[in-house]
Length: 165
Image (tube, rainbow, N blue to C red; front, top):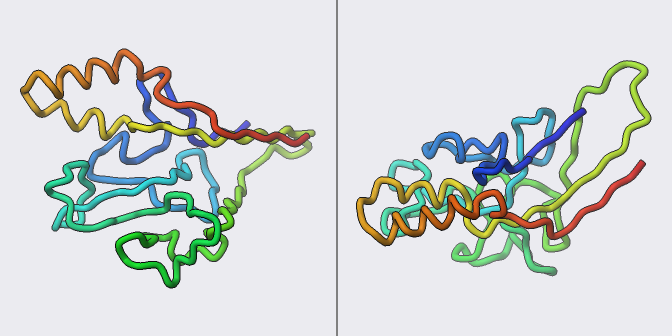
């Protein structure tokens, strides 16, 4: 009926703008209304032109940082070095107690009953981070990319899940 954020065998998160295009990134969402909107808790670094980068030496800022916060963390008073960046900063229910994402998706008339299942996935190295190494003609990035590609279908794990009838 509806799915947001499935991971394919290449390690690509379906709907993640950054996996599809290295110059874009998936924003933080408080409300998801379509399958191409995916809540991804991550830092996105930006270069001096506000373009996403995975190059640590070219990064000058955070364009987005909505990593899940430690319990009790106050984003309003946090030091900028460990702050929240992007739309998550204005999301009232993105706090040190967790985050609530609201889903509003179309359902067929007279549909149901529906079962809702959610999973929180963890991907230690994302598709974009790995594949941005393709431009380097050196043995180490090539070897790393070969490792990633060989393991990409299992590049993530389920860390939490829940369902309701």
